[in-house]
Image (tube, rainbow, N blue to C red):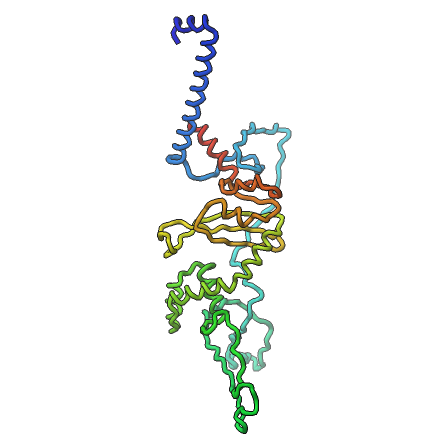
Length: 347
């Protein structure tokens, strides 16, 4: 301000307070805008890692907060001690094979003629050397042929009874009726697809190498029918989740192709809930095309206990619901601290 303006404001205390208040608000707004600008710069040009440099103090901090560097302590010459460190060697070599694998012994012996000594005596076995080799047998397919004998009476031809003239055992129960897919085949396909991330097309090619033709569409239909058959187990997992004292919750993106009413590029979500404790862990998966908090809200509506999530706003309902305690995630909490540190460093 100019001297004339300062003198004018000093003569009017009310106006001076108004001007000072307005200047203070402007300074706060400028500071806030500078912080937002630095934050955006850090997102675009800053480093993406969440690791922070820590001083080498020999002590692991509980959280990755910046630590003040301690001044190095140099012992006096009379206090210096010579410490002898024993020599050691690292274990080298491959890890041992599992002991529960079946073992097939192959004896590689010398010819009978070499067992005779030059002195005329017969050599005796004094020991042996062993070496374990790992064999692998690829997946082997075979046909299980179900044979159901038929029985009939040649004397009366069934006229003496109200029962059917031909007696035959009932068809064994199957996961998918009237299908040649057995439980072992379905388990292999489902595990390969959803655990080992093998697409149905690649599985079809692998089967074709054994001259077995199973199309992608067939395996897709099988997967849908298996999911329906496993629905009671899924409901049991949800019940076990709701009686847990502690639950972890998170959601992850998933792309679904040819979903009715949606584009192939639209994002869907898999909601994952883990409960049951350490003794009997229960992981419950729930698919939804939405990431809205109402999805988790409906699943955890009857839950009473502790729920640990990240900072996503979709979980804010937990704090206002009686009987539920919202816990933060230590893996995500330092993220905001690191962002603040980056903003202050570039300010």
